Length: 235
Image (cartoon, rainbow, N blue to C red; front, top):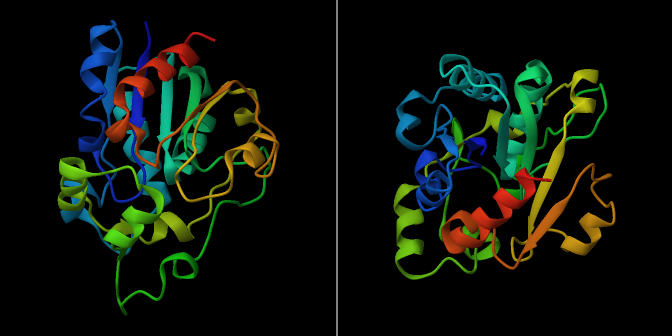
């Protein structure tokens, strides 16, 4: 049995994991879903200072104050750049990282994973603290989210704090020994999965699963996602 710490991606909160928590728990696992400062039910805490260090501390504190050891850190989407520095700082507490259709940091010592959100999402309103969610984004990276699920995500999604994209991360040699696993989604609007597996984003350092879903398999195919998470946790 495993301890999963679930870190959601852009625009999301702990709410997005709702469908997978009961089946994971029913298999005897412990599950700790996190909402990063500035999103979800913590949207009221957003400020111009909320960035990557805030997100990293959010996760570190959940681990610290729940006395967690031997954990599987699940980073979805941009949160790949959250779970990597978390694991780098507390490697003895980490069993593995699971990158769920996520940013995959490289094993380098220089700053990385910073990008200009305006290049992808267009110019933001002056003074904006976050990147808003909209139906165009949903259609592009989550075309399989339909019906009540679509209404649910659109009603819950909150702006993604801008500094989550612009802040780089730096990881040390501690990170190099962390076990990594991966789940890739074929309909999430990015590079073809086969090219990623072949090394377009860099070398993969562990086993992987591929799901025929958009960017939110925890919403559209929760049972298959749970099956894959458990299988990868046992490798």
